[in-house]
Image (cartoon, rainbow, N blue to C red):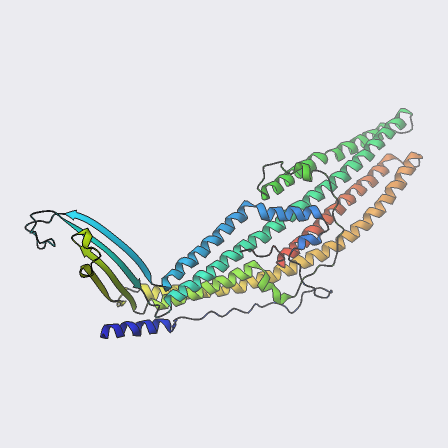
Length: 467
């Protein structure tokens, strides 16, 4: 009866829920009150790719996140972490196991014991069946802390998956925008090549009529070759980007050639970007959520290390039958049973426990430092992306004006050349300036779109978290 009272007291202590070690407190994220922008803060749309004015871009991003093989691996790792959480939780409840055995044997006649009573003169049969239970009460919260650490690891894996989904969405959008930019550059190049070929034909006619010199013909032919030389690298870049998008979607090279090979214009740049408020960044950005979860895990592991200093009690009990005859196995007289506690007390471990505790505390300190670093890096990333986007918008506006002026200058120079009022060198210089500014305008338009994607990524506008 006294033993039974001890067991009851142990169970009562276990269910009281004592947990040693520090309790995790979510860290505060040091972020500004508002972003450095003149517009009023508006909620950030998670599906930012729908705001870029291109339905095909939306399809590319969504198909990438659905079919990407790296993301499938990350989802598998998330599932693994949830399975580990289930394994950790199993320690909180008693383990129950059943068993049975049959043996035909013969003992030595010179041995100490023969349960058959035949003194080793004949073989006998031994039948047994049992049901055993064991449970280690979580007296100091070691199991609870291990479950807490496992749950934090699930959050780490979830944040890793979200970070990869966000990165893939941004990569797919960026490659798509670069593709459209290269295709726009190709159109500019081919348009200028057509103009250069027309100018070469005109110059040759004028040379045949004795109006101009062979130098003008050579300059015009060189201009055609120079513009033509731009085509091959741009076509190669177009193929490379289509293949990159195919890879992101788990497809073979060239699989998207038919769908993406035809040029589409880039959407007009817009200065209006919904950015949300800075205080929400810590909840959105996967890297900050991961750093917080890693700190939570490290804090729980400190509690696990502290719990190892305390005694551990295992309660065991069993009931079964044992008989020399199979027919008698279920008889009440064939029963056997046992119950009682087992005590483990760590008296001397050679410094292993103190060393493990110091290590876990240092790891928790490192996780806290990493959280602060991650938040600061996120703040810098948003500030840099916003500054780059605003600067590129101003750059694009200036280039647009330059293209308009160079277009007018080329028309005037070409007309004067046709009238014989100027030589071809002047036309050539103006056309080169026009080609350069047109190419720069297309590149700037692409950079504006890319910087907008980078800003959305920095703000952690991304695919909704999936379980």
